[in-house]
Length: 191
Image 1 (cartoon, one colour):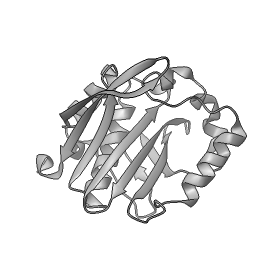
Image 2 (cartoon, one colour):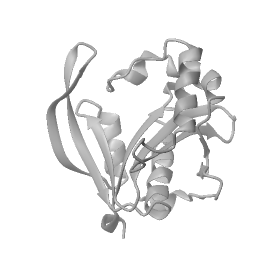
Image 3 (cartoon, helix red, strand yellow):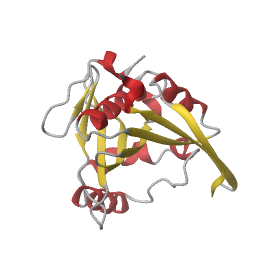
Image 4 (tube, one colour):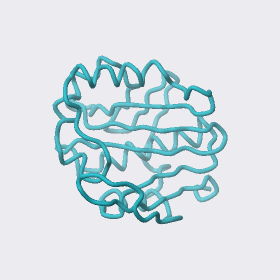
């Protein structure tokens, strides 16, 4: 399924919207709302990151992310959203993108455990990809994924990404080395 078929709306206020989700720009106020879901160790099985140790730590991190939308050299744009389910108003996940405008974007995403395997990742990441191509005019969207993360690999493949590279021993976390695939979706693949 392509991102064109997701009925994605892109309002001017920075939010991303689909039929079931609203992506709100991340703020420090989201920390207290997302902390319980972000504490779930299952989210960190395939990424070199640990659950936040406290609400204060998460608030500080979100405050930094919200107040620094660019890299210090100004070459990269850092975008972060939280995904809210329309029907319940509950938060279902997060989206991130590091953008080199007019060139490329590298994406990352969390779908909280209660919302996994229900198509929310497909909707949210599909909206993000469309946003990156239309608003930021990138030539390629990249996702770097642990080779063991079958669900994430299947997700990006359904959105049209193809595997461009493999890096062995890309990282070391949870007591083991991690290999990564680099998936890419070039703009011309969407035409």
